[in-house]
Each structure stands twice: as structure tokens, then as C-alpha cells.
Image (tube, rainbow, N blue to C red; front, side):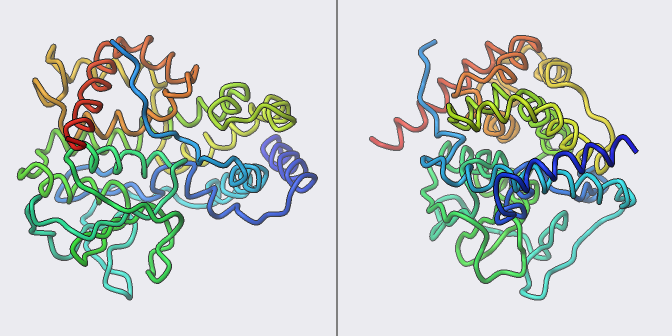
Length: 332
């Protein structure tokens, strides 16, 4: 009963402001993949440097989609309550009609390519999407030039983002993209431990930090660049947005730690090393950093609480320097 009232209230707020034009896109941008899974027995669930913005340069996209987002979260939360939680056991290796992998499904054929041979790279997504940002962070760090194509792949049977194209191959779903391009970028496949932490970043940290962001209207408005009536509205409805986004995520993945608690476990996993991978950042470091760094570049309260509460602030500063240095090297 209480949930129904909240859903109706959010829907009424949404209908009062805008039409539901971009709700589907917003659902794609508000969280990680909606199918936890396992692959081969591994659970698949100093100076301040300028970073790519988490928000599209024009706020018009967010303005059109803002209330559609509220409706989408309401309907998504309702659907999440009715849908049985996906099993976390089994191995998935299926393909869509166009031959590409579906969400949560591994490639039927490995990429089998070297970094120096990579060409014709396109990344389909949106700059507001954390999954897009983490893939883009990895590509930039390893010096891979790519074209950003905003939105979904126009001809694919896969209807979500992000989608990566390289050398004529298409890979869907950010977790599957990371798993498969890791070997291309580093010449080494992820270990079981590294793959487990990539899974935790995708299915624990990402929803957790997004719930914190959407629950704080002032913080959300700052990140989105709103300083008008939308900022006031966000402050009013953000507790409901955070509640509904959390309902969607927890209905799919179960409970997840608060960002500072999650960060403490990551810090412990680093084992006193400068980075998770040792003396230099690796795929897992870049995956975590890319997920939140653009939000942090807006002086977000939720990312500051995550970094300071977990003790990861020094790691973050080292990541800023490492990523900035890799960008500088690419331009030389």
C-alpha cells in the first residue's frame, strides 16, 4: 500500500511536468545491467585534473528526460517487485538474432585481437552513463582512439547501452565488454579475483553510489548542472527517487553495502599496494575509477563521502595523476 502511494505520487509529479518521451533511455542510464549472472563459475553479479563531464554539454537532454526518469523508476520498481530475482547460477553463452551477445551473456567467440591491431572503434552510449564512462576511461588510458556515438546502436537487436564496436566486432553489456577487452588492452585475461571485483563494481558499487546520488536532490542538481526550478523540484522529490531507484536495484541484486563500506573492502583488497593491480593501475582500478570519477569532478557530496569514509582518497588522487599522465602521453 505504501509503495503504491509512492509510485502514484511520483507518476503524478512526472505527468505534471513533461511527457514520457525519454523514460526508456533513462532506465538504461540509471543503473547497471539487470541480469546478474555467472561466467565459468565466477559470479557475475595533488593537482586537480580535468575529467570528462558526467553530464552532456547541453542540459536539454536532462531537462527532457528528468520527469520521464521519475516515471520510469516508478514503473521499474513496480515491475521489479513482480519479477522473480534472476538466478546467479549457470553459464550463459547465447546470441541475439543479429549474432551479438545479449545482456549478461558472454561472447560466443572470443575477440582474439592485439591492442596494436585494434581499429574502427565506436562506443555507443551517453556521457551521463557510468557504464559508458568506465569503458571510455579504459580505452583512453590504454591509448585507444574511439568515436562516441550517442544513444543506442541503430541497427542492432541489442537495445541498451553501452555497446562497443571494434574491428567489425560488436560487444554488448559493460561487464561483458570489460571482461573481453581486458585481454585485448593488457594481453592478459582477468584472473578469477579480478573478475569477481569487476562484478562487484558493476552489481554492488554502481547501484549503491547511484542510490546515494539520486537520494540527494541538491547533489543531483549540482551534478546535472541545474540551478533553476529543476533544482528546487529535485530537492523535493529526491527522497522518493532514491527510494524507488533502490527498490529497482535491490529487487534485482539483493542488498548492497553503502559506498563507504564497499570502499573499505576494496581498500583491504588492495593489500597496501598503491593500486589494486600493484604499482600501476589496471582494469579493476580503471573500472571503479571510471564509474564515479565524472560525478566526483562535479564536487559531488556522495563521491566525497565515499572516498573519505572508505579511506580511498589517496588511491583516488593516485588514479587522477595516472589517468592524466596517460592522456598527456597520448597527445605527445
